[in-house]
Image (tube, rainbow, N blue to C red; front, side, top):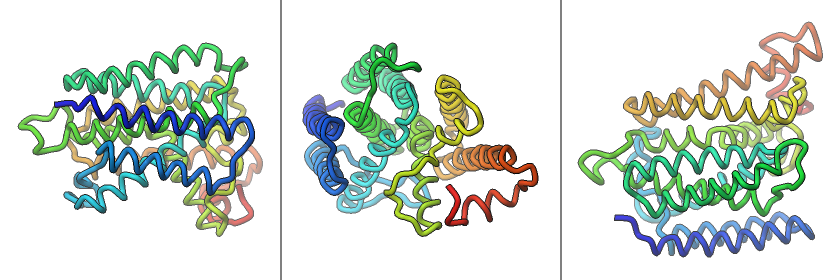
Length: 300
């Protein structure tokens, strides 16, 4: 049974993030204040709204978790995905297209599961983003900014958490989707993997993981000569392929399926890095991807 009252907490959180993003876009805001408000929003959703994960669903062979650890993990996930959408918003139409794809998918998934309240939320966000995207593709007439990216990211991750919980093994005799966590990862894979890669590289290169650079996937595709619209199409097409793969292979289990999805992302990232290196230096080798562009602190 869907609890319609939970939507009130999502609306409240969106209003807070809207105000935060608007102030950041207009006047700027320091990182600590921004993180604190995102923490407040995540806490409202997890503690008051009960949007939290109650299990790791076999990922790393971990299952049920108590309320404290499940709540803390859920807060981390919400903040991470929220910021991941904000970070991917570097090319006209990219964050909006990925957000539209995510909300459309979750809307269909919820409709199949008869969870109409969340299907309505997902489709409403999808319609809003589509209306915005008409004016946001290159050359953009209007821009999303932190205001739009943060709200899209928040709604997407909350829909993902609810989708996972509604399809929890054991919650009902026959869930509508198996490996719901892996399917959710596939739906959000582009911003998730891009942020994970960025943070990982910055940390191993002994740089601050929160200091911006031009090493995001859209920046890297620009170096290969992709136009803004080509970047949006390519990453969206890749996203659709990952979603399709997850749906087809959902019976494999979360750990196996997430491992496959991330492995494909690593392979694609390796190819992009190699192509960029080869474009700059004809003597660039495949091993340089690791020793020159990953572990070298002076690289981007």
